[in-house]
Length: 236
Image 1 (tube, rainbow, N blue to C red):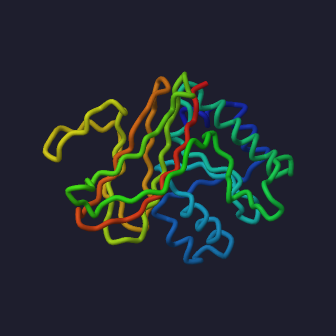
Image 2: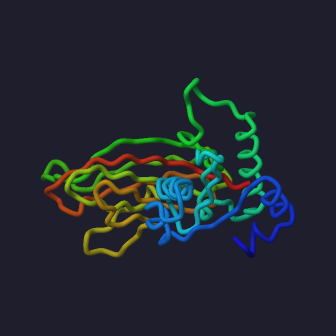
């Protein structure tokens, strides 16, 4: 970030004029949440923890700690990350100043924070409890063909509170799935996501195509539900 977007003069000017800037390490969140630094830092830290997805997360909050924008740094378009970052910052300012339309009279921005991603699909499914007629692997098909120039695929996986953890691997749709003992042909994945937790997969693709997300239970005899939210940050 410091060698890229944060070295841009317009970016620096925008951040200094419109925002109060800070950064927090993940390991510092528990202390802040406990209230060691006061009520407001505790609330801000709670918001950071709730929206955590990646090693570098960018969040914009109102003075009341309402989340306006959430953008994982790894999902910024690689061709022009500075311009993309500046775009979401400007959108955040517009939202705070009341120029963004909210859905519903009681809708809050933090229920639908600004990001560069375009929502693609949301699927609720189940993995595990295999039998001869029901294989352990559950497959979710993902179609990114509308994004002809490619983009950054972001898959958020929320695992249910059942007994079994899950592993989630992304493949090209025409890839034959390897056996348990075979070579790993996965493009990316989120492995051993524990019950009640959220996993994330980020995958950069150069052209629109079909993918499949394969979910596998850590215990063949135990099932669990999972919710998949898929979005794409298109290449410009």
